[in-house]
Image 1 (cartoon, helix red, strand yellow):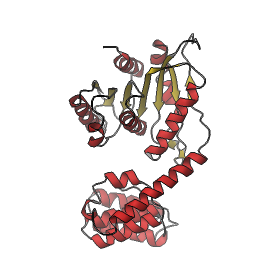
Image 2 (tube, rainbow, N blue to C red):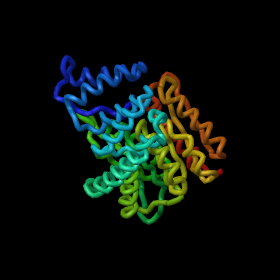
Image 3 (cartoon, rainbow, N blue to C red):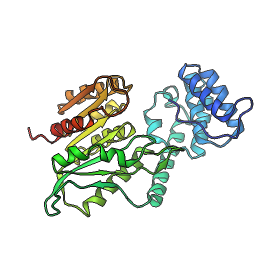
Image 4 (cartoon, rainbow, N blue to C red):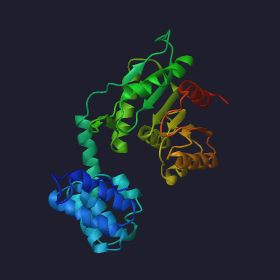
Length: 326
């Protein structure tokens, strides 16, 4: 996928929406020459968009036009492109890695990312997670904590409520942190992983300050984009969570699995048999098992990219696996 394209006020014979759709369509068809033509049209109508410049760098690199690829990558860095993790992981720029100018451009992008994160932390609103206490909660007794992350374009309350009954059965608190990047006409998205990490850990700290939490029974779960974030954070901080429950989440880099050794938490994956994320989740489950982690995947029949219809039973089963003492 391209990272996205910048905004324009209309683009010749195509409207902005049509132009963006045509860019994505030509890219997915592998017609990179046509994608370049459309992206440059967008750049003419809306110059100084870092995302557009980065997308052009990727397309020029994939067509073997190395000098142009380096030029546009530098331009994206100069315009403030800050998605350093994306640049480091993508295969789209493989043909220009190591060429003069590449290292300097990526270093600038990394610096942009660090500066962007500092600004984000300074301006993010105070933590306000959804919090659901279990019945008969005793504030003097530490309890398990279920941290549930919503998906792209969604909001926090539904992903807290879907875990409410299963959490109540084990006497756990449920919290749902709130992402802060607005998605037009819908909900919110998590942004860069480091931003999501800041919001999630800040929400956990916020709840710890008010309630007694059993640090050995903190479970991280998420749906869709939230599932991706939960997987990444579980691998980054394996000692902070006893288990990770990704629901309908996309892939994570294989290298991340290899870095943690045998210290991984338990993983319980949920996916529908009609979900495009299923293959990635099966692959990651297999990799985790090879690492010696306790990992399980449950595939729900006749289910697409959503929670299973019997979500109460599915969430109970997931928590039973994660909180088991064997």
